[in-house]
Image 1 (cartoon, rainbow, N blue to C red):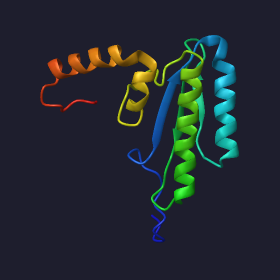
Image 2: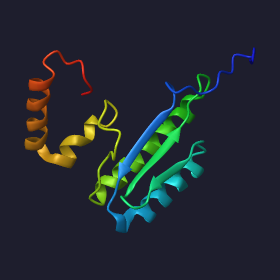
Image 3: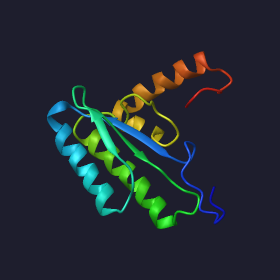
Image 4: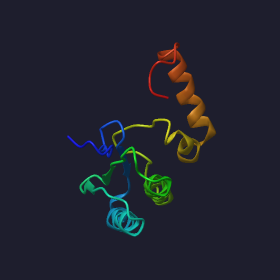
Length: 132
């Protein structure tokens, strides 16, 4: 156990993201994302299920990471998401839409699609205790 205050990443502090892209774009998108990870100095693997176009990045954050490093981690996620949507993919493959990706829903599904999702959510979750 370290006494220097340099706590490692935890499951709660790790950014786990995924996207799903059409197979013809899979190699280009994962290559570009791996390049972002490398060029932005972020630590974490990107890997996927090449057969279905789904891939993940696991980007650990530690309590003492700099603001610049944290910003770079979220830049990787933003770039990955933008690339996926731009080629007709989804901002998530398996992990669902949480607060971090909610902003992409209207772009992916349109105003009508999001309105329908909100109506279903209100009907199934009237107390708003489930994921957004």
